[in-house]
Image (cartoon, rainbow, N blue to C red):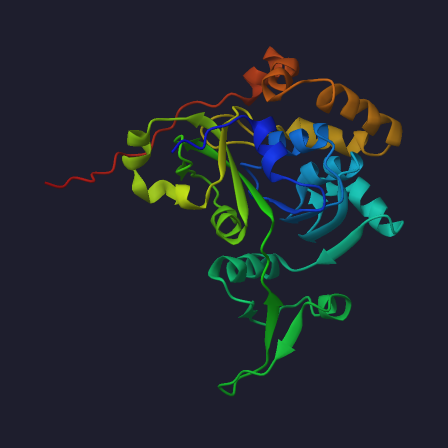
Amino acid sequence: MSKLTTLPDAISKYVNDGDTVYAAGFTHLIPFAAGHEIMRLKKRDLVLARATPDLIYDQMAAAGCARKVIFSYMGNPGVGSLRIIRSAIEQGKLEWEEYSHFGMITRLQAGASGLPFLPMNQTAVSDLEKVNPNIKRIADPFGGKDVIVVPALNPDVAIVHVQRADANGNSHLWGIIGEQKEAAFAAKKVIVTAEEIVDESVIRSDPNRTLIPSVVVDAVCEVPHACHPSYAQGYYDRDNEFYLEWDKVSESAERVKSYLDEWIYGVKDRAEYWQKLGKETHKRLAVKPRMSEAVNYGSY
């Protein structure tokens, strides 16, 4: 049964006000298009969970979508702090819950495994234990040193961007792999956006690359260039200039509003957004093919 739908329809159906939303992806394959659609549809009171929130949550906070953020390391990669979220937290306008990177991933692993919590080794960030009551120490029942435990995270919705998927939602992704699989298996609902929708035979040709199977997917949407300004390995490069420019934009509430009006509310979808970026940007972000060696899955 096909799960193919449009991004606006998927967001309208599966993202509700007050939901906990996990936008997955580490360094690349960050689902900016889905975040922008959430903003255009004016979803409110969301709990935004993500390891390394990146610019997408800064933009969503600026658009008034967020009530709370759950995160590990919050920053504009290679530039500095996320100004909008940081300012909102400091002013008491945004609730927050912080973990180490491994703490966030362990929470997802617990959620994906159907467990109430999982243990992890003690970390160097012991101060987090003082400000986050969800981080606890328990005795090792086998007599070793105490371990840290964190509760399961089961988002209402996980949004994952992939390079390619079939109409049923079986999804291939490659390059830097983050927490996409754990987020998808932990979430109650899963929206997949893909650079391209391909025939099932393409997915079946390389089963080891299918990190997200259709059984956990509720909707799949074909959305080329969905993760700009981050990148999709093999499709387009990271827009480093954008990350630098956002640092300047986010210094001013007026500039942020102007950006949202022009680039989020002023375009109808990701295709129009990509065209608006212009040919110079397209050329700058273009990548040359670099194919992997073929794998022989031969059988009878």
